[in-house]
Amino acid sequence: MQLQHLLSYVRRAIDDYQMIQIGDKIAVGISGGKDSLILLLALRHLQYFYPHPFKLEAITVSLGFDNFDLNGVKNFCSDLGINYTIYETEIAKIVFDERKESNPCSLCSKMRKGALYDMAKDLGCNKIALGHNKDDINETFLMSLFYEGRVHTMAPVTYLDKMDMHLIRPLIYTPEKDVRGYVTKNALPVVKSPCPADGNTKREEIKNLIYTMQRETHKLPENIFGAIQRSKIEGWETKRRS
Image (cartoon, rainbow, N blue to C red):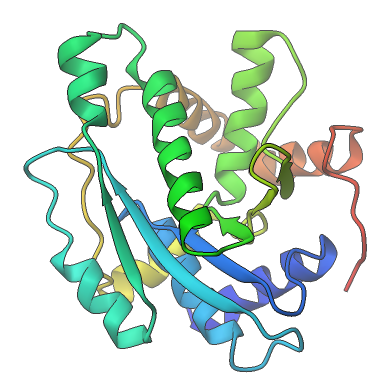
């Protein structure tokens, strides 16, 4: 997998949904996982030739786990010439030790996002880029359908009125296998999540379901994503085709 191939996915998504305008300052949420690192790398290279000049910041919200080594990510950001901020929190302690949540992912996600939004605002950013890929979009769609009884998924662009800030998802056209292939080939400094709930969630169940069904229906991921694009789900109206 070549970087140019990944950039083509990202550029098309940004153009289709007009994610970036002149003068934007974009905070990239860095979890330490493969998707967020690829997103940061792609946006950094996009800066070299995109017609709308924009600035980048990288932010990691640390949940407070002891075994979360971000030195590799620090060096990665330094090599790219991007300012990197680590926001230290005690979210893990609150969720697992104090609240002892039976469904920790929901509360953790809300608190982590809140911390990310606050730090992005403090750094003067007007947009936040999140590393949700094409498979994440499909999985969220099925999770909403199966577990919530509604037709919904993450939108390419979301406006946060309370923060006066936009969320953008430039990886929406990028398959997870392409991200994984590039990360493996180029040895990007992926940090394994220390969360005890990692890999043991409803999302993982849906991921496995899609993988199993895809053995017989090879175009299943494309069919699901196509259904999302053809639906009337809020935020998925394509603004411009490249």
